[in-house]
Length: 583
Image (cartoon, rainbow, N blue to C red; front, side, top):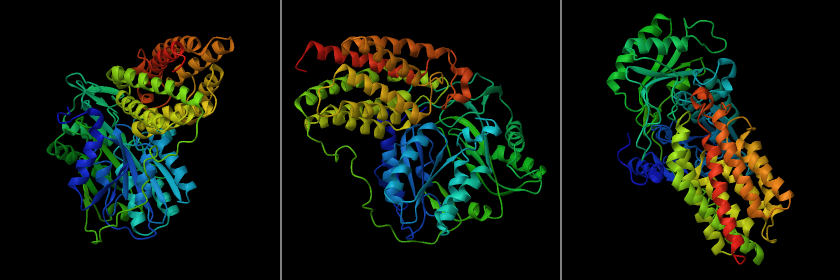
């Protein structure tokens, strides 16, 4: 378990601060993550990688010559926000465009995609690539749904070496996609990991058993088997990966492959070498020639006791990229040519909230803003009180980070709203500031979606009119549409949408029937609570819980539960405002 920490919510930030201080020759801290401390040739494509904390050496430890130009680092097991990704990319780019590379998780896809759109709009050529190497997370025919695990390294290394060679963005992207298509990974675990501040691991494995097909965010395995010997573990890993060869490869015989035997956190290096001894024998027997194998901790999951095997099936153009020299804090290969230190970049964004102008607002809208701030305070208090339980629910089939992310987001939103009100903001602007702060601080899928909810509601309320029940209802309807559009979820997928849509519908019906806002909201909150409880009977069709659908049966969706808790808390603020007409 994680023993050394201060405030669990600050763990990721403090770890990144210490990492940058320890590796000043190679990396430097920028808002949102780290970039190379060494100079990059003008016009070179910048490869910016990223994801949640808790996976070191991924992602910050892979920044350096021959590897990534920058890494955006999110909260524990949560994607960095679009703002963080944008800040790191701006600091890392040198005129040749940017490739954003990340594991295929919903939050990463959302935030890196939004950052790419923003960079493109600013005139910076940008492409994205989601790594999909985990064979256990979806069938071969649905490879686009697969997770990115330790195969991240093969794809990142390919893209970065291509960029270092001076290839243009289109070629860097083509080679990175080819590497992704030819990379396969599979993992096993003997115990789950424990997040900072938690008193229990995200999942447990019975004595004498192991989990098969686990995820790197602490997701439980897809099945269990008896604990094998080291040789038996090697046989399972190798046979699983040889069973699925990339397109165009008829047989493993005569093929060359980069090999990664990855420790997930608490398996000792000596144990890895014992396993790799048999992995090498089995691959040789199958006719595979291994090229520059990597054995060690490369993509971890805190203290998870487990290992994964990655096979990167090389081609004549991929092999020199895999073997090219690199020097990063946690990864070295060959010898890189010395280069000068980089000049500090002035391209990083200022604070997205503090530097946003506050437009003029009417007194009725500022009065409504005071109610909105009270609602944000109620949300923060409710999330704080239920954060551990939300994490527990999320850990049943997911990664257990929902409570931490919601707490960071709600705290940031309340603080941003308070500062906006002090500057004279109306209701719309206050909610816009809160939305940006929530999305930026929380990261992850929930951060992006709550950013959409608050921003859409703020747009509907505006800064001039005093919001009435109809305006609020219209804003909630629009927010539900925005969440479904961005998250690509529908009712029945076992997500927050399953509580949000019934809430929006019930609110619209009650307001349409003439109920005042507080009473209508009360009715809708009751509907949301019932709908959240009903998600216990659903099987997830999206997100990290999808591969573990059966495990989640009987447990409600964490996102739906948190939404129901939040709208109930907001009702208290609305009721107070109704009782105090001057609020």
